[in-house]
Length: 484
View 1: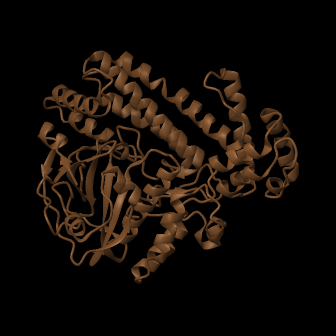
View 2 (view 1 turned 90 degrees about the horizontal axis):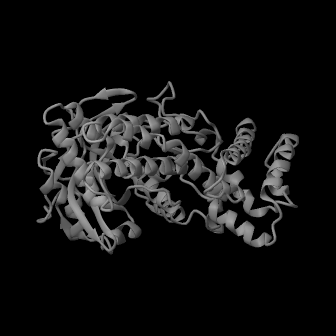
View 3 (view 1 turned 135 degrees about the vertical axis):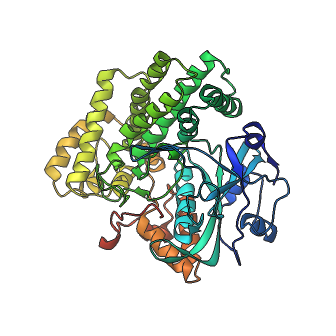
């Protein structure tokens, strides 16, 4: 693995060096060939196991923890930082570089008296959701591997410690800019220096001047809007959308009590630390804008307020446009990029009426949408209609839907397009929990099966069809903790 050290070498003062605490008796739990290919690796081996568990130093790695702050549940925390994640550097791959981080590698200067460890449950969940989102073409950080151990770690109960090897195009968050903005000392210089680094590394099409900063922030707004549109279209709830969990590149980042919707529910809360529902599923678009406004405030030393406001005004149109294109693909009607506002509102109403029906009749979001691959929009809708108890309400919606789709000349092609837009399989929390419990008892087969299933969510995989069934009653809409 070939590493470079651009962040370490160019941003002195934005991190502290720290070495991992060795994980005793490590062993591989999971490995992603797809993520490994991003950095030019092939198969797991004993040397990588020792390096990634902190038992052996990689000579070209620098090992550091980044400092940042952030708004957490609406309140500003002046110093956070990598409390349990240690970055080795940027691995050079066939199509660019990826930060390599050991999440759960022991305490850092930013641990705030924590142990800096992760437990198997949370490490496995991060790995699986990273693979699942990537397979759905939702921008995300990646998980190369999970390393297990017998090390006892206390969370809600005593659990086994583990490390997730995380790959990220960048670990820079909204909270990085907030830390140096609110720190006051050399505010403009430090914010500008960080912005210049981000632009040079990830947005080379933009210049490091007033025009370039404006264009760059506008792109950050658009990328964030696109990511959240994808979350909403595929029913993904992040659970902890603090500004320190928001990637400057618009990648899904820092997974804790996440969940995909089982039954469709706008006010679904997946985090038991969020009883007021600040980060409920239906609140995510608004929180995305709120977080961008926090970032905009941190950028006022280098970007004029009018330019920041102009960029922020692009958020809602970008989110709506991308959401409509995704839902149009899922439901089966074309959405052009130059729709009028009236046409957009009509499509949003059609989609909204459909999701209202799902919520009122307590239908499974993923499974119901999958049925669009087995219907004919101007003819047979029996398989979809059978999902609804209130068929009268469905029939009323269907009339509007069939009119919007119009005549379908090639039904087979239309159905195949729906199957390619509507996954059969998602990561359901109860399945992750069951597979993790098996792994803790020495049986990795459940994790391995779930991993392979999620890599191909649009394929039928008939031998694994039971994974697409609605959850049992105990597993429906599980709420998780921040240590998940």
